[in-house]
Amino acid sequence: MTLHITANTAVCIGAGQCVMAAPDLFDQEEHGTVIVLEDEVPADELALVREAAYLCPSRAITYTETSAT
Image (cartoon, rainbow, N blue to C red; front, side, top):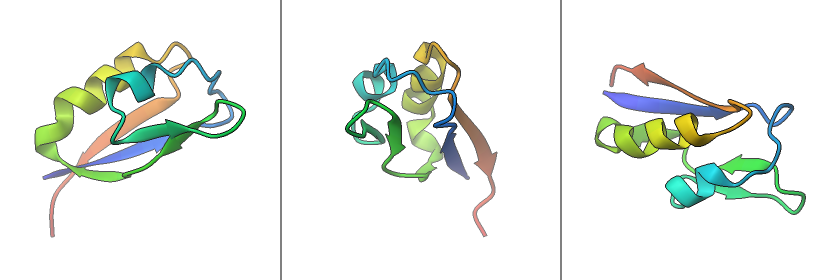
C-alpha cells in the first residue's frame, strides 16, 4: 500500500507546518506556497503525512491510501 499526497496551492497560506512535520516530503516555493516533493510514499510514512495534514491550518494537505499494483 502507498499514500498519494496532494496539496491545494489555491488554499495554502504558507504557514510551513507541513515542512516542519515532514521536510523530506514538503517544501515551500518562493512565496511560501507548499510544494509536494514526493507525491507517492510508502504506507510506513503515514504518521508523517498524517501529522503534516493535521497541522496545516488551511487544510491544503490531503492524502489517500492506494493499493500497490
